[in-house]
Image 1: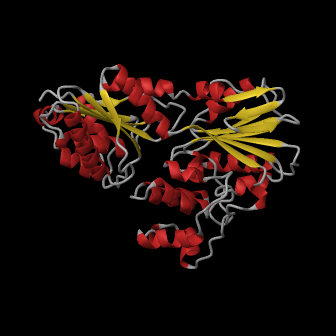
Image 2: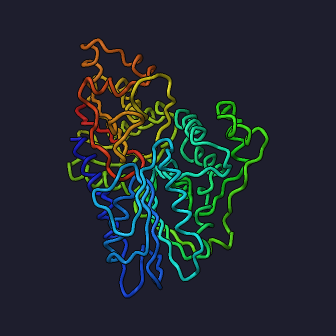
Image 3: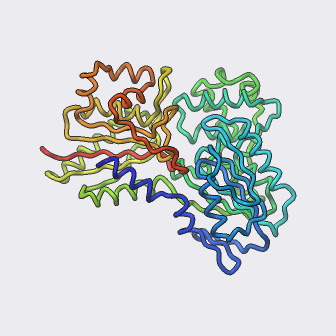
Length: 430
């Protein structure tokens, strides 16, 4: 049942359908929410991130194919190529040569435009790795990969990772938008970051940046990161030579507007509605979303306990979003969602509770699954097979733990990313 709730939520979050529902073109005006631009000539389109293919295809349909030229940078090629579009396969979670080629093509596409031109940016999670060009041209692709590996295998939340990424990039932190200025710009984005950090989506290539070089140095010092960075990047931190990004209030963003298409809050709301249809008493956990996976699991379970107490004798469902942090401590396969569920499985052992955590993008960490599900019998079943949960956690191998039990969540790539979703059920049998 809990998997049915999750899968139906993914269906509700369909990117193509959301674009057709929320973006309109009529009488020469393109409207997205409360943003409207008069189209004076066919626009140029740059789509990058996990949802790039779906967003670009939907926009082409909305505009009736009236696009001058476009670029799509995604984790996989499209099922159908659009006319006048170039396609690049970018890397994730680390940039590849395709990420660099895509960024170069994007910068070329927006070069020498005027204020009569319109550029539409379609931005989604994963864009930080898929669209990349180092600001310092001595920095190599290998340097960028090593730098990103340090970030994604540590304990930094995504918004802090992206503060660092922005200040090393020629396209992040608003620099792609500056390259397109003075053209009019519309950014339609799918948020995979906390609600208060919209400028962090894909490291914010098309919006001004509130973060500073000072924050970069402080983050690197606090988490002792600089010593782990490759030499050409480490030098920029130790010598404090990072270049500042454009800030809010910069007049070059005066012709730039944004619209959020989908978000984690929308996913949580959809899951609540769907769980209600299964006759659960539902509530969203508004507490900690992005802390250590064990701390968040403890809080979620306490919230579930309180929810069950409010509805004695009735099944309840607690819905939570966000992205927990989970340091990599071994060489196994897994990710933050499966680690969260494995830890929670120990906490609910013997109880009439179920816990699911999964990524809406279809992938959890370095595993092929999007997440996992556990119930009060998970630990007993594992013990019967001689599996030690603590050993699997220590080896960062939660995937093989749940794969052995047949309890991974398999969705394949979803062409979307609105962060993770956690569903906790209590059947309240007393």
